[in-house]
Length: 217
Image (cartoon, rainbow, N blue to C red; front, side, top):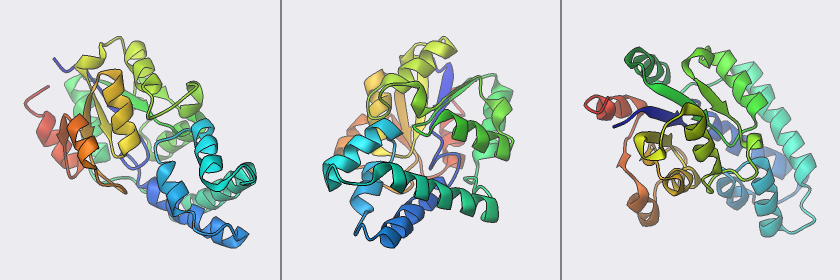
């Protein structure tokens, strides 16, 4: 029995991963850091602690992580202030429908909680969620299961009775490791055969997620 739905944020509720990728590439070019694409795609779904580790493994201990993230965050925020926060099509409709169904809803994002809450307020999504967890609230974020286990614990549901809606391979690995039912809505990265094996279902949009859940809730 499905008792709860846990959402990722970037790439699921908000079309922010594209902005992040563009910000990373622009700052890397400005700082003369070379091709950053392996780093940016590898960090999708990671919190800052694990992202730091990954980038230094890929680009060496001399990689200026703190300054780089300071600059990318500033550019990202500048674009959000100028262009608005891009909300994924169907996000508001899906959240409203789930709330009307009385389903428990959580958000489990690798992004820091302060930024998560800021995004939710900006989109007027805050009241949909009983639980909001940022990546800075767990020692290790995705692909380890910590953040989803915490979400299920705070919601008071067993992982096997909860669906995780994710767009990234790291998010799917995290949800599967937690024992949840991973539903993927691919955004920047398509699932590999390894990820396909972990999926409970794959949808091409949030509208399709609602159609999939219609007979389950």
